Length: 242
Image (cartoon, rainbow, N blue to C red; front, side, top):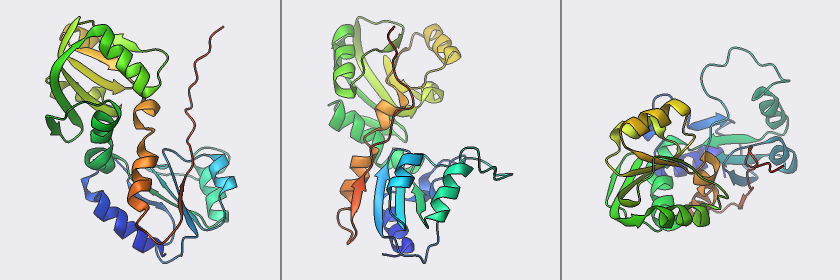
């Protein structure tokens, strides 16, 4: 299949026009008229994936490799070092980021992974109501997301509403109307703000809350007459116990 055909298919699955203004979803690298030999889906792209994949591979990822303006190509530094390797192997790259968050990822994690019943969804924020005890909720999150530890802001023994945004969603806390907000990459000053406003927050990890991207998009791609496989992205962080 030509890259243009696959791009058009992805645009129907999750329209690129839905992405945020600061985002860079869509074609990152490639020639729309070139044939793709296979598709590899992953949360992120790294050196090992590029080296292991054959010539002509199309990578479909969640996080765009390029953000903002590119003023130089220093091939010894990220992301130019990865782009050079891909160009030499005639590989292509398409990203589905904030558009996919809105159409698929947030809802999938909220309902399919964590088992919550979706009551409202406002672009990036999924919300539900019910009754959870503090330890019960934390145990659920650790088990479902495979988190050995959790960073928690505030403590409410009884929680009657929960909101979630996958990835780094702390900037959306002003839009959250819930007892507890689940998201990743919570910064110190965001935590201070949440504490002052009596909003309980749980950092569920950026990688851990978005690692389901590859399986979701793979299921969509099964209708295409081209082999698509998952390459498991590595979490750049690891927990060190000394």
